[in-house]
Image 1 (spheres, rainbow, N blue to C red):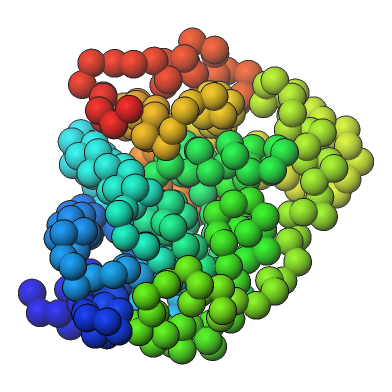
Image 2 (image 1 turned 120 degrees about the vertical axis):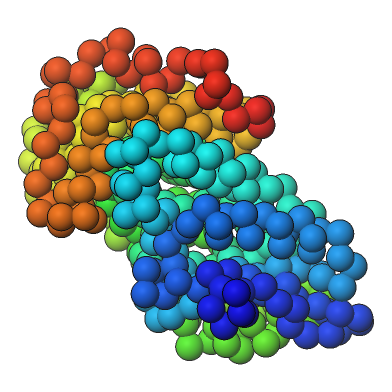
Length: 354
């Protein structure tokens, strides 16, 4: 496959001697919003392993091709086909993807991610664990898994659990999106750089021996966080012990935005929402990203065996009728034992990172 058609473009930019040496990774499926395939994950891993040992490479930068975004997440159409056939391919995809997320977090060289445009799910996993994370005015960042019957993964449950107050719980249960100011507030990004300055920044990074300082020099004040203005009711409502109580508090708050959030929670998979709350609360106590990824792998493998993931992808991506028929259909029908099953260690579902 030629460099022009490869799903991941990898090349060196700049002088590998005293002038820098930048490893450029470009996700190259613009018509699919750079959605991740297993082959892309494998290619990214192989390149990063190679560049870690290459003295010419002083830093790595990740971008996405096209104008719409860095990465919309996994290729859900391919996942739907695989899960309806048994899910063995998706299980292997999750395993390799989560291991790649751990590598990015521990990468021995500066790893810079430009989270331009849509950056969701698997796109967050490729970017938000990097050493330097950049958002632009076009950034739309989200962990939207509960909308398709899945639970926040790719290390996203750790990011959400560590967000200020209960803002991460709100984002995880509703699948709501963050603008650039929100992403900075919640710890998903470090710097705001206007999209018009990104080409100039990339050129500077190719010459730089201090990528963090170079990005900081190009950064500007970010737009205000819309989420930050709602922290009072978010923290009060989402501090409850159960999803049912969260829903009750949202409805009783008298805040229009809280009622809208309640409708989003109730529209998502009841099972996924309950498991997400439990996973986020557990993630707060886990010692490392590796431990969180181990937990996420167990949860994701369990989701492959239930009905909601296939149904959620069908409703949102395949048929696009936006009318998922969840099973169970209500929060009350999801028992504590059902939630515990997702989180319990099972033979064969060990990622082996922790």
